[in-house]
Length: 118
Image (cartoon, rainbow, N blue to C red):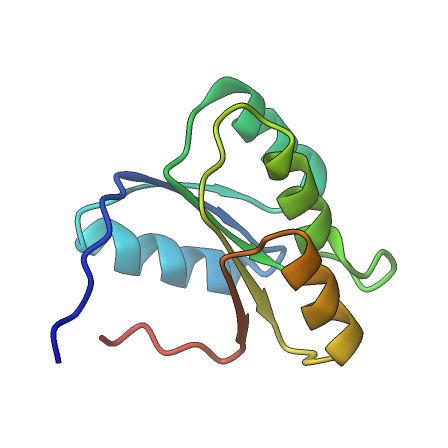
């Protein structure tokens, strides 16, 4: 089976867990990507306003009080002129979130923990 190669140079990782962000940053940087990160929806919006990303990886729940910020990021990206692939990660595999992600055109809805080994 041949693996598909994606052309992607700049990633935005959005997760409120610093350890998760650092793990993704280290992994993808080592793999040759330029990686930027954000800890919140507001921080992600700032990064997206000033930089073009080839892909965005976002946690669904950035804070326990708000619930689905990763989907808000996906909705925001769908309204931008550039439309990078969006991968949403969740520790809570609720069907309503998966359905909402599908309606937003999220490219992948993955359940944590996600293996970074290919």
